[in-house]
Length: 344
Image: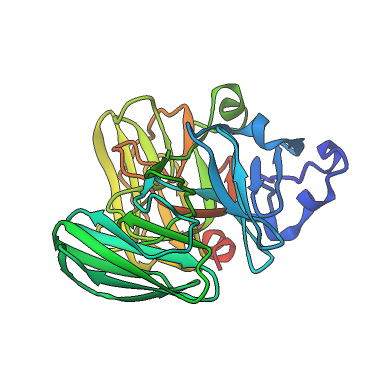
């Protein structure tokens, strides 16, 4: 079968004609370029809202092109920048800033619980972190762009000591700093970002028999078995997607009728760097590729019945945290060579 580019259906969106988007000389059925804030389905331009269902029950912050911290309203997606460079769609798990006065620039004493806790700040000064009644390891100093993670073995208080100018302070559970959560007198929680393509828009591009998913993303930290990109049903019985493993590697997974059929990993560490990944599926012939390397095909798979495509979410509940630069969907099973080519 010869697959032809649909140049007559593109409505003037010349960016969609780029050879860089092609898999095996064929353009994607759906493309979302979050760093450019442009989208298309079947060669027809779409807005972010037309293609996605996005929710977050609180406001949240992000960095704009000028390096200024901006606030996104409830249910407003965030497109993040760093040093003026567009990174893409920022998706984060829920987090709480335990520092009750994040912008007062003063010393403080904060109560933390056991486990990893990360202290971050902005400004030209520094923030020394020391044990008070808490017991743990990793004590030191946080500076702008260099957060400090401590491991608390017995919960209690820690002391934050300001040197120089500190504009914002954040203390949160976990081993990685997330976006700034402003506080004024009490701890504040930022809700989780939930982003998916579903309903009629999903049905308009998805091919139940065969297809290829592509994603370009950067994760902030490892969350075992958290989804990177997954097509799935309303429950947990049907899914096609790419996950994080428990050792911070990509994991390709297919599950049909609650039976795991494809369950393959690779040796690529996926933390704190931009990665390109693809998963191609068809009956008894499914395979994954990462950063130019295509793995071995799984030759004994049936095809799950799915009705939505989720970003940075797992049907098992674990969520990833970071930025998505681009997502594409091709409505055919790409060749192994083609998968290697698009993920370089």
